[in-house]
Amino acid sequence: MYVKFILAYAIFGVFAFMFTAVFTENLMERQVYSEKAENLAREATLIANDYASGLYSNETSLATVKRQLDAVESYLEAVIWIVNPSGLVVLDSSAPVDVENPRYVTGFDPSVTTVSGTGYCVGRFFGSFKEDRLSVLSPITSGYAVRGYVIIHYPVSGLTESVRSYMDIAYIQFLMIFLLSLIILIFFTEIVYVPLTCITKATEKYASGDMHYELSVDSDDEMGYLAASLSYMAGEIARTEDDQKKFIANVSHDFRSPLTSIKGYLEAMIDGTIPPEMHEKYLKIVLSETDRLKGLTNSLLELNNLETGGMLMNTTEFDINAVIRSVAETFGGRCREKGMILDLVLTGESLTVRADREKIQQVLYNLTDNAIKFSEQGGVIRIETVIRGRKVYTSVKDSGIGIPAKDINQIWERFYKTDLSRGKDKKGTGLGLSITREIIKAHGENINVISTEGVGTEFVFSLPLGSEE
Image (cartoon, rainbow, N blue to C red; front, side, top):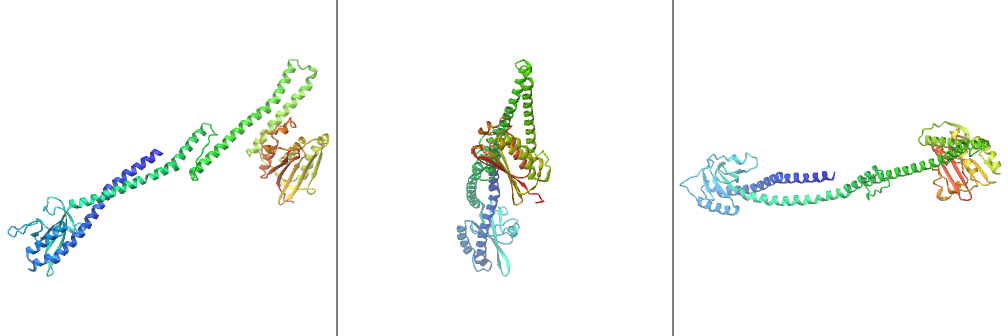
């Protein structure tokens, strides 16, 4: 593109020079000829009225008029004639008076200066000269009749010199404008070409897989916006690739552990390391590990469907308080084992929301399961519902280990586990909170977390209030 721009600039220079050399010179020549012709025409009219008319009224002699024409010729640097309508040259400022040998202009036509519409003619004036002359004509009138003509012939060579001097100025101006137009080329180079080169190089890097290549274009125009958008796109792709690598590593880890256990127990049973009487015990362990793999696989499929919008939402109006009570009964046994209290603070006997009942029940199950899992013996778990405007806010609060501040924004990621939670969660897949967030997002609502390390954690999500409320 840059070569094309240089080529276009060169073509522009060539055509501009041709225009200056041809059209400008032609216009300049016309202007110089026209101005000179006007000046000569005024002089010719003045001579016709003041000097030459006396010849035809016998008021002035040829010698007197000849002296006057010679003086004017010296001033104008032009040949002055007085010619009769028949073509007889009465007086010629460039030659002495010779009455004995009359000279005629063959084919003389006084309309020659009006044919072109310019008031003058350029040429050798009916073969009277060896070089071109600019000729103007003014009639000599006496008694309301044309008696003769005053004709002034100016050498074209003198006008050519004037045209050339003007053209020299025009060429200098053209050269200055051409050089100043280099500013456009410099501007294009700095504003367009250099940023575009950087963007092209970055695109090649990104195409080769180097998504971490830094693209920096310091510009506030469209080029800067394009570079920023491209850099942002590459950053998002790089982040996605990093997440994908991390996801694969996590999946491999979570699948490898139960598979290793299953393989080890089966090999031990086959080679006799585990005696037959112990097979039942270890087969139950193998069965438990397969259930764990099945649960992990189902969770991954469910999360993928939620993120891609592939899971249909069965939206209805239902009593969320009833769902909370049902979930609380499910965890009653676990709470008693750990000596924990499950405190329900619900608004009203029933509270209608509009959502997918099964999905919201899963959300409550995941949050309550985490609250019990990460709380100490004798802790309190509080589930509360409140109405604000046309929204119902449900919170699940525990008095457990809490979430460190550095991990608070990462708990929604797949397979992510904090350092504090790893000792508490031996069988968890690390997908529960990811699924929970995607379910709430699928409803067009939000879920937030408030946590203090060593004090507890509270999750709060919103749902639209039902029409019955």
